[in-house]
Image (cartoon, rainbow, N blue to C red):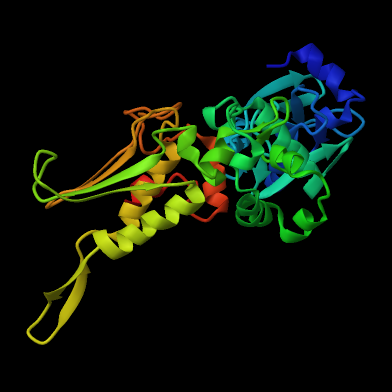
Amino acid sequence: MITKDEIQELLHSTETYRVERTTSTGDMDKFQEAICAFANDLPNSRKNGYLILGAYDNGELSGLKVTDDLLKKIAAIRSNGNILPIPVMSVDRFQFPEGDLLVAEVSPSDLPPVRYRGRTFIRIGPRRDIATEAEERILAERRMSFMATFDTMPCLAAKLSDVNTDLLRTKYLIPLLGNELVESDTRPIEEQMAAVGMYDTEHQCPTYAAVVLFGNKPRRFMPGLYVQCVRFKGEDVTSEVENEMQLEGNYCELLPRLESLLELSVIKKKPVFVSILREEMVNNYPYQAIRELLLNACMHRDMQSNTPLRFYEFASHLEILNAGGLYGNARPENFPSVNDYRNPLVASAMKTLGYVNMFNRGVGQV
């Protein structure tokens, strides 16, 4: 946390993009927009930003008395769910003869763009504003440079021709960025893909996310990237196999096939009498729950494993098994209230494609 002497220097600092001074104590929208803007760090200074309550624009103190309730109120901004991804910040009180200061210190995010209630705020010198599409793109490209997950790594054996770029453009770029912006973008497709993490310009090849989502033959590069669907007559894998199939292809092709499999083969309806004169059609399994689990398995699986995603249907139950255990911040003692993303780029794309919402509610709803 910043020291008292450093605070006094900041009060009169000319680095206005790093400091916001205010005498207000109740304008929570203003405070959260400022914290969001500091986290985005558009100038890429990699320096912390400071929201200072109790000071005028000229640096003079207003005579504020910082209470414990005010401290808790500002500290709660970090995790109240309005600013996502959650910012890294700390809050402290500094006492001076002229009055108190409440200082919220915000670190630049490694996962920009950071949004407050869906809007991306940035600092432009002393002014706070909503990011333009071009500025959002800068932040998104920066996010890719910070990420080191498998799906963002270059697939060195693949070429641009191994990706269906027409599919990528129509199914992903246009829904993500808007038709007008994509149509007006005159850059080569490699640069457009690089801007959203789908191409590595240094190695001149697609990333693994591009191959998973839009690849022509993704199993050439990830042999385990398919779904093994088996229906058993009994209660375990030693029983007789009634039917077996493999579903493969990029996720734009595979995920609709999985949904069709559920609707046409797995989910069955039968009449159940509720009275002498009335009956209801009841599913053997809740469609939305099984769909949620399958999509989560696709999204969170270890792409480097040669083991397929296994979808097994037994006489009285279903089993879904995917390579990879709980990841990152998710642990047995906090799951499912806490989750993390092994494949954040794939997860984000699946949200754009309309398959998941990334609200961390799926397992709880199941």
